[in-house]
Every structure is written in C-alpha cells, then in structure tokens.
Image (cartoon, rainbow, N blue to C red; front, top):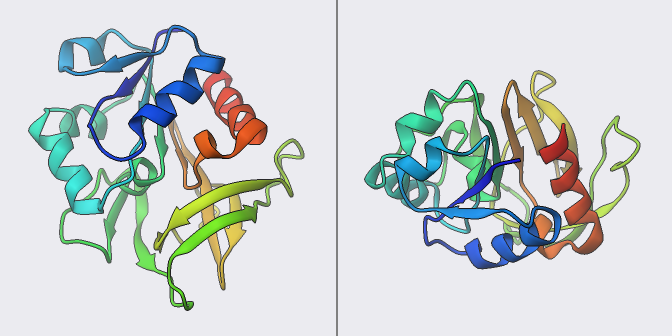
Length: 189
C-alpha cells in the first residue's frame, strides 16, 4: 500500500513517521503535490494550532487537495484530525469542513487534557483501552461520524469517520502497542 505522511514540519512528524515505519515500512514523507498524488493513503499529523496547521497546508498547496479528496484514504492525527472540522474556538481560519461541527475548548480546569485515558466504542477491539491524549480543543460527539469517544469532564469524539476520512484525537505514536494497533486497523479498513 502506498502510504504518505505529509511533511508539514510541525510537532510530532518524526515520532509519527517512526511509529508508522513499524507497521508500514514503505511509508514516505510527502513534501510536494507530485508525491501526494502518488499515494493511496495520506496521513495528516501535527501538534500545532488550528490556524497554523491550515496556513501551512495552504502554503504547500495541500489544503484544496485534501478538502476535495474523494479517492485517497486520509487519516488525521491530533491537529490533523481537528482541521478536518468546520472551525475551532482556537482560531479564525476555516477548516477542511469534512465533519460538519465546530471544535470547542474544554471547560474543565485545567482545560488541557494531557495523559492516558480510556476510549469507548462499539468496536470491541478498541473499547475500554487507554491511549495518550494532549489537547485543549475537542470535537463534540455526533452519531453521524463517531467511531469512538472518550471523556474529560464531558464526552468528546476521539476517533471519527466519514467516507474516506478518519480522524484520531489521541496520539497513537505515543500510545504503545494499542496506538500501533489502531493505526494498522484504520489503514487496513
């Protein structure tokens, strides 16, 4: 399978790349549109603000490609998932608008969800397993796209799916064996 990781030079690119090498040895970093077009699966990762991630996608001519993608599987991780939504309370930029919802800031104190937390899904393979989270903004639970949820003072979506787009809020690359299993599962769906 031809898998590419968008090299947006933000946050966790190296750790996501190294984790993916374990389950997809042929993973390649994508630096331009030509490389993007050659892949069947695109991974969009990042630890970045909503506005910054959108800005970098636009500067590198990936924004419109992703927004209109119908053929490739696109997997967003952390801020890569968040920018698939309409907008975020974190910034003014519009997202990819794949998922028709706006991200909200946690109202809990502290309002950054950091650490290990369980996820809940109708899929028995991932239900009640723990994963590593680090985020201050969240996607509300919506049955139209929910694959799995978690709770930090309130329920939120932590894995979402719509057509060929998948989003993972937690960090599979920092979640050990369970994180690699999730990545492999979604890649092979």
